[in-house]
Image (cartoon, rainbow, N blue to C red; front, side, top):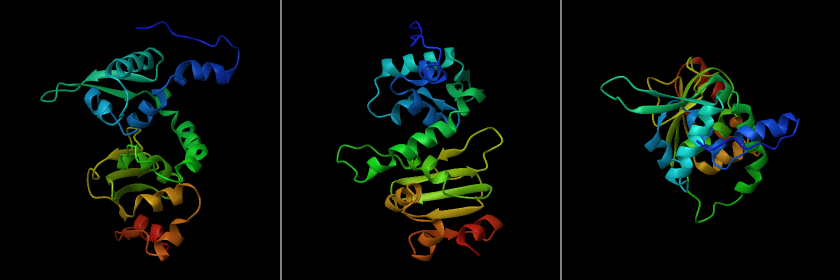
Length: 209
């Protein structure tokens, strides 16, 4: 494990950047907010990171108390990485950075990689209520726990693990417009840009009923 580098400044921002200022660290946090992930899954959803850099960052994050590593019980028996409570506290930091960086999403570049679940954190701030929401985009599907799951997860890749309280169908452009504040959920539903299905309290609330 490489020795920890420090700005050696008595400043809370500098101390925070000592732990999360290296390239890829906050994107690893983004992925782990979905829950425990295997190394191979992390590498697949972080296009551009080398295996050496990813392994180094994960060791540094474990040293700094942001993540833990554990072995799954049989028949899985694979090692997974997951955030500690200290690491999960970075959720509002990532959301604030996402808000700050949202104007740079004006046009998708031909070289840009994309994963459906990368829309999860921005969309999370646009939805009110509590419950499990399944989201279908052209790029794929993911699910959100409004109010957070019991184990600290706020989203997950793929279909919801059980019957969701609401299902949303929309495209990536609408999702980006919502996260940037250019469009409200109610407006998007009225305009037909979002289809909300479900008969429970949450689904009705999201439809504005």
